[in-house]
Amino acid sequence: MTPQALSRGTDWLNGAGLRPTRQRVALAALLVGDGNHRHVTAESLFCATKDTGESVSLATVYNTLRAFCDAGLLQEVTVDGSKSYFDTNTHDHPHFFWEDEQHLTDAPADDLVISRLPKAPDGAEIASVDVVIRLRRK
Image 1 (tube, helix red, strand yellow):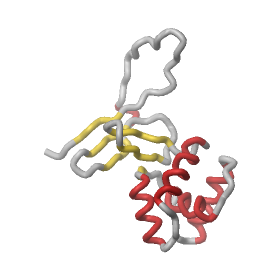
Image 2: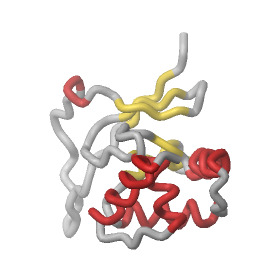
Image 3: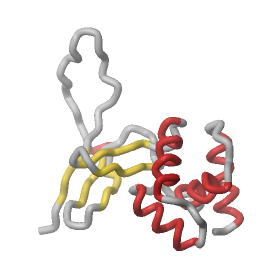
Image 4: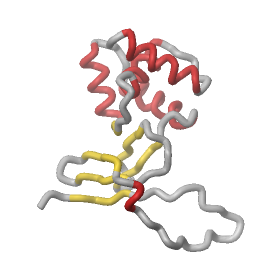
């Protein structure tokens, strides 16, 4: 990993008040080191970590992604109720899920119109609305 990627990762963690441990910095550098947003699974991030020669267990990757979500650094997007993707873009926006490749990408938010939501039950409020549009190649 480049010094710039490591520096970006460290700054990202510091901005959220997370202690920049060696493993957190390595994962953060992979997530935001190039300045681009990305969607990862724990497994794909684990594989990317192995490719850098960094020693991080899959359990550590899962725990770290959870800590990043809790700190507001990542948005978790669940597909099919069982597969979670983690998005570095934490602003509200829709996603395309490419069924054939099992891949998540951002969808254009400007094209999405939600005209009405059902009323939340008594004693509850709507926290967020997740939009995942499933696609398959023709």
